[in-house]
Image (tube, rainbow, N blue to C red; front, side, top):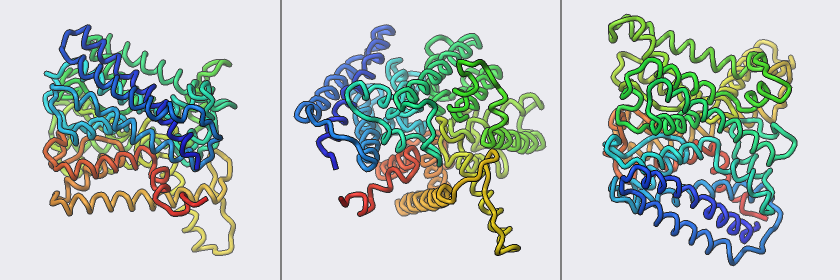
Length: 485
């Protein structure tokens, strides 16, 4: 294990990450909100700690192997999540404890969107901007960004890319070189963010709200600058814009790259993709169920208003964004539980969405269908095909392994929360919202996570990391085989 090389890379990333404190300090100066000092302090502390790690090991440039890649990815998220908590610790407003500061930082960076802060409307603009900036960087993955930059510093990136990019098939790349792949993904990400911000602005948001909400929309994070979330604006147009961009961000970014290549625009590529078609089908079915249930229950005054709330909330929850126009937990009958379960599906592989990913749902269904056929015809040979291509059994085995590990981590976290005297509904929804990187839950965590115990918050931080790193990347570190030469 190249420990000194790993320490050197971690120090470099901490130094690079410290730069993210400066835009928020500039926002504090621009709006004169008095919150800039905390970000300047955090900048100097983080760059100093990064220097301490980098300088003694600056000449260590060993080749990275797969094992080092997994360890570095986990260290990046844990170390940078911890460094990201510094502005919250140093800030007087909001006045957060250490546990709450770490919770808010990890929730932002993993794009979970759960918050312990109440009174967002009265917070300094610099703090609000920082929360959204953390989500924006976490949306595509800090590691993917680093892969585009660190090769210039003599650090290879393929191992990091394989460990970080979500989805069951991780060997495919948009471009032949990994650095070019990361840059291509970030160009797409930046352009979508810009378009989303402009759309929000022309729909009625001011410039600050438009930029912040575009960050959290494209990242599928769900943070807002207001306690009422998007319900603050009371605008069906803003709701539609947000839902559309959430769906775009929930699509595999490789599809965006292919559809908008230098050869021209080709929308047919989307409809040739099985995962995209299932994603849209899931949204339509869920929207229809919620619309009919709400309309028959007479929750809203008109069919148009019912459709507005149903469509937006379905897309927000099922793509794991967690925005709200109003509290969906107050909806009648089974709808809140249905939406929480929909977050387990999440977005497509290679998107900024959380959950288990649509492609894994497809493969699990196809595998179940194959097993039923085998019961009838035990000697027959059946292959699982996606897009006309037969998938190797290795991928199917990996999906089943992922599903088992996902379920195990979920159950363990939920049982621990219940052992801490949390009621069953709150424990279930809080664990689901954290491991799926969703944010809002039910029961005591319907509006915020401020009232749960510190111990429960640390359990949920771990669940967020498991969800963001898709379980195996983190779980593999706990196996004795990983540490053996």
